[in-house]
Length: 290
Length: 120
Figure 1 (cartoon, rainbow over the protein chains, first blue to last red):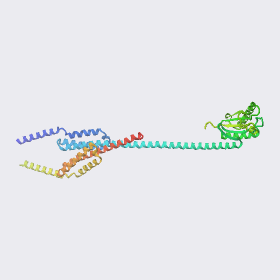
Figure 2 (cartoon, helix red, strand yellow):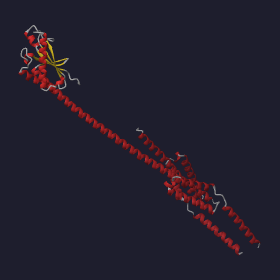
Figure 3 (cartoon, chains in turn green, yellow):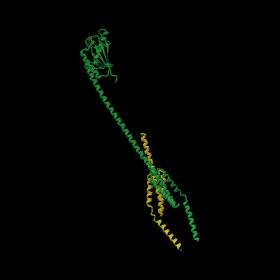
Figure 4 (cartoon, one colour):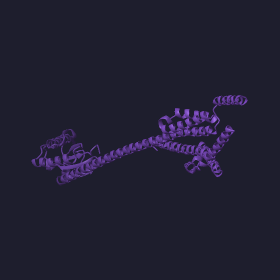
């Protein structure tokens, strides 16, 4: 009777303890573990590291089981400690993966950018090369054209020198034709032979100096009346101009002037000097655009 | 008399069981090896350059030492648990170091992209 009362008392005491145990607050480690898991689950681990997060959950469950089995067991603290690390591990794994992906993305960006820059540079190079080739072609063509023109001009000059006296002066190239070759005395009509000669001159001018302005000057000796000489020289200059124009020299770049006896090139006191003074000069001005 | 006998028998059996338990836990050599390997690799990854990783590595190392002492004393059961803790710390140290390295590399790569964009 007495012993059974003792047993009942003991049982009651144990029950009280058991109830007390059930109400025992969780250790700090378990509280930390719960918080660590919550934090990890809310973070990027759910997406990036689900396996690690699952392991963390299992570790937390183990700690919770140890706690509910025996609230005072030292293992609860150990398992909670481990669970906290597993949760942090899941979180760190996720962050490391994100950093890794960031790095890879940046690497792709870099190589794309580099490739793009390379492409741009290559295009620019090609374009420059193309332009250079074009310029070289143009230069070569211009050189050829210039050489051809120079050759033509030289040929034209050579042709002219065969039929007339050609001098280079400040006013241009001066082709001097003797009056007696062109005209009969006191006439302003070209002799047939003169026409042929002037045609050669015209050909040389159109070939060698197609852009130059041309002045035809008629000159006489000092014999006779001045006005008569003036008119005669003008008529002769006109005749020469007309002949040149008829042979293809552009009309708008050639003019004729009568100088009369105003500009002798030799003495009028001798027959030879007077013969030299009777002349027609064709002055070819240097081309303006050069 | 009968109850006392059964009590004695029960206590005796429990003692035997307890003894069996204590001696039947083998030394946690595998756990020790893996904890040491993890701690080593954390160190190699530069855990000492990151304060949090460094702390975890220190905890792991201390607990490995503690576990070795427990094993020497024959408390394999406790040693096993301590090594589980050490493993968790060492693995965390490894990952924190990896994270730190990956972030540094990502920063470098992003800086590189910025430089390319700036045309350097």
